[in-house]
Image 1 (cartoon, rainbow, N blue to C red):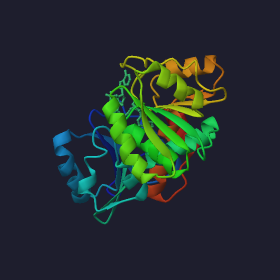
Image 2 (image 1 turned 30 degrees about the vertical axis):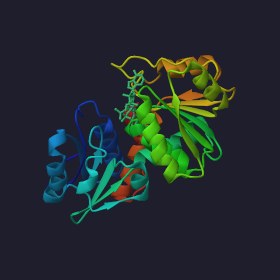
Image 3 (image 1 turned 90 degrees about the vertical axis):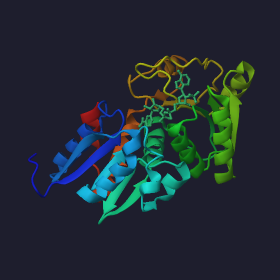
Length: 282
Ligand code: NAP
């Protein structure tokens, strides 16, 4: 494409951000639909997030994605927050309409769409065991809480964080039992695994450059599905082990794809060319 004076600018704020697949994904989508738009990456240091939000307005940037470590920090600088983002306590997409910035969270919808379509998960009434209590865990809890899961057990390496998260979300979703589990307590974990319909890894364990998760999933209930948010590598040790035990299991590339597709639709009002976007990041 040719960048012209009329070209609308989109991008991603992160730190670091050089590894992001979003520019590839969105530029392919803009090209496929012949839109006069371009998407780039902005490495924004944590101290500069307020200035970066002002720059969206000052420079007339049409929209941005927000990733680690800014998803929560940017919220006070916005003019409006969608219900998904408010529930989750994090924003990953911003739309600029004449200087008014609205924050959305498409991780929630992106995760749920891929869990349903890619893994055949039915969240309604499901028993969920969630590994991790960071930013991504919040999106997963929101997705299951908003879709009527029966139970969400949160197991995290640092127990306190699981406890705090469970307390916060139990208030938000009173129809779902949300409680912490001590991931170091083998008998508690075995019991939970036996009750689980969907096991979700939202930790960075198993990600390229991070040590693998230390979890034995032999006690996982028969027929349970496994969703690993990690997409680098495409198949983590957890996904391989789950498949070897006969479970349906997928990595997080589909979530990345669908959160991007939802952001694209918020910005452009057009249906996202999902096949083109998938090909760009595969
Ligand atoms: P975060 O806020 O930094 O949280 C990291 C979590 O992982 C914490 O709960 C941490 O436990 C735990 N952890 C880290 N290394 C671990 C290990 N070796 N063993 C056990 N637990 C470990 O990060 P995040 O934003 O939630 O992201 C987490 C992962 O999700 C990343 O791999 C990210 O790429 C992925 N993600 C994927 C998508 C997607 O579209 N597929 C979207 C968002 C995130 P402590 O509390 O004990 O430190």
